[in-house]
Image 1 (tube, rainbow, N blue to C red):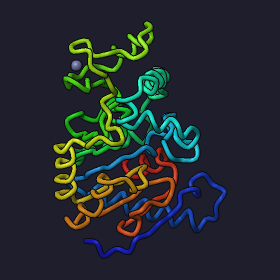
Image 2 (image 1 turned 180 degrees about the vertical axis):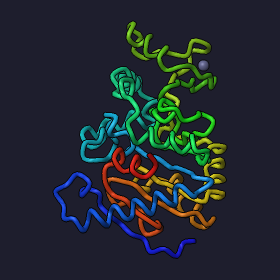
Image 3 (image 1 turned 120 degrees about the vertical axis):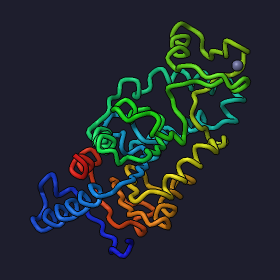
Image 4 (image 1 turned 60 degrees about the vertical axis):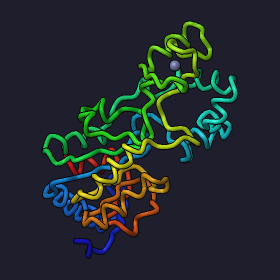
Length: 274
Ligand SMILES: [Zn+2]
């Protein structure tokens, strides 16, 4: 199945300001990929920060990225700093209270993926995002693997108890700068995977098994440079799946794709799936 030549096409033409030939070419690739998606039976979608930027959630390392603009903020995402330094935790809680994700809403890119679920062809949605917007858009939580965890819960680093993030944030807003676990007094952290923290093996196995059985892997909004998530692409390819990459910029795995569509994700995904 993988003898199609890989094609990279930019979608800026969709917003005009482009010559007609590029538009026609892009249109043709969109039509072809639409057909592939329509005939696929087991689609695995891998999403990264790029699908949520149109919901107002900045990515980390892009030009407007959180860590690009404030490199010291990366410390709050490193487990050893978080556990070892109360000031890092206090800062981290203040940032969480103001996080744009609490006001964010799913965009047309998120909603297009719900359409795959409605067709019954969405096997698994693996996301590197922690914002919960796929579930908010209507994807069945049972189909979602959040390999980097979720910011919508907190976890106690001593007793492993989990609780809704909003309760912890209410405590912060009521004056607790670094609220401890109510059960054991341990350090609370958002239920995300920090640097220096292992991913959850069951989640990784689930994602890899899905990629292996998929007949299409759609990678959206990720530069495919972070492992082990990026490994899903070669796993799916070896398993015989078609690979389609939709991203705003080139990715590390464009050479493995049957088609690469470059441009606005919230424009392209509805065109492919809507
Ligand atoms: Zn505890």
